[in-house]
Amino acid sequence: MTPSQQSKLFVRFNVEFKSSVDVTLIQSMGSDAMLASAAWVSTSAQQGLRRAVENPDDVRGVINYLIKHRHGTPFEHSAMTFCVKAPIFVWREWHRHRIGFSYNEESARYKQLDPVFYIPARDRPMVKVDGWKPGRPKFLTLDQSMALVTDMEHFGDIAEAAADQKYDEIVSDMKQGYKDEYARYERQLSRQLDPGLARDCLPVGIYSSCWVTCNPRSLMSFLSLRVGSEEATFRSYPLHEIELGALACEEMFKQGWPITHAAFVLNGRVAP
Ligand SMILES: Cc1cc2nc3c(=O)[nH]c(=O)nc-3n(C[C@H](O)[C@H](O)[C@H](O)COP(=O)(O)OP(=O)(O)OC[C@H]3O[C@@H](n4cnc5c(N)ncnc54)[C@H](O)[C@@H]3O)c2cc1C
Image 1 (cartoon, rainbow, N blue to C red):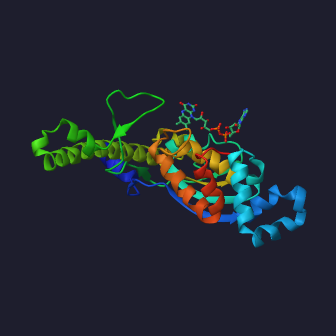
Image 2: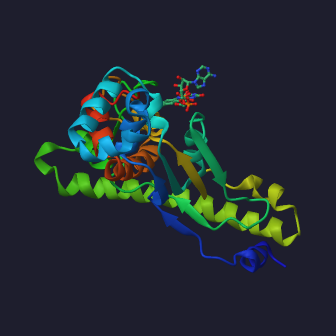
């Protein structure tokens, strides 16, 4: 059998490419009222929740006070569970958030990983700026970068065409690598190799899914580092792809705990 016949034999799935980090809210528990009530345990004990429901202004006041003065423990009295589908290079960063986070990840020992791989979207800032520095890494989109090297008189079509070409080169290189390595993975599986070993050749751009459970306090800590907001007191420069996941979580947090979220933003996105 020739090598090309052999590789065809084991490519059973079409490899898929995506540019998103997908976050679904599985379940949530708690509310702004619950967090305020936890803070009032000394004065209102079991009545705190009723006070919170009847007096939303009190809730706003106490939550603002707690966040401003970094009294964090009341923000542990709620929970949210997300199902997140992200490339493994994102998980390597996400899993570093240890405190107040619980994780369960799909196993690559007991099942074959789906052939889904990450490619950057065309407008992802991806070209290093002049004077690029680690610690504060900044990037241009392909359009911005090509505009810098294109004659301004002909700016527009030429820059866009050059950016298209560069994007195609980058993405087709990535896709080829993914396809080759997934075919290798399937060949190893077809030899009845331990799946825990067969997966060793897979690139970190392959997607994996986790359930992630956290509380508002731990989520704010995560958001303070993984969203690169210019309004933040301490500006962070996160990887674009973890920021996609963080922004999706932030939106769900905002829906469920609007007062806490507003206070977090108002106080410079510093986690209490
Ligand atoms: C932009 C950016 C770049 C990064 N670059 C790198 C890198 O190059 N290399 C690298 O290894 N990591 C890097 N990291 C990861 C970083 O070092 C943290 O591991 C990650 O952000 C999780 O933060 P954390 O420890 O505060 O979170 P958690 O583990 O969730 O901890 C939350 C908080 O609990 C407290 N805490 C947790 N553990 C302890 C402890 N052992 N002792 C005392 N207090 C504790 C701290 O107050 C901490 O802030 C980077 C992170 C960001 C945002």
